[in-house]
Length: 124
Image (cartoon, rainbow, N blue to C red; front, side):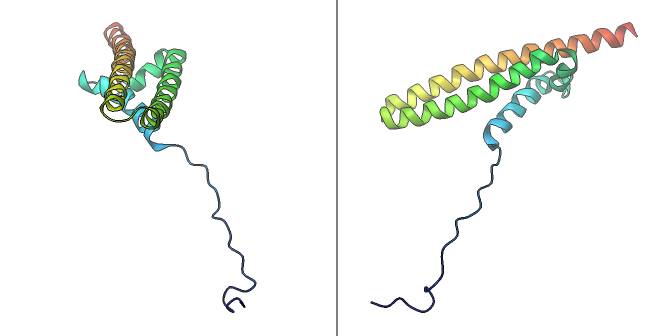
């Protein structure tokens, strides 16, 4: 059977592959940085903590990114290996526990950044 003229000699090209950063872990990390300070009325307290304790802030940022990626993989595996209500319950338990731990870490970091800024402004 002869091939149609329009398909003869043509090859399909694969779409170019572009590496883009995953948006969800980055957005969650920014939310963890901004929200604890905003809840205290100091929107920049989370970013101020990067100037006060850079190693701790960068470490917590990396931990947050790794945790969100690992939670995504765990949810994917739970969906494949355990189905139904048990999978949903375990996924929400994991997400909730990680959110509490990460929020408390970022809140402590924002609180230390706000406290050092307040002590600096009262001393100066």
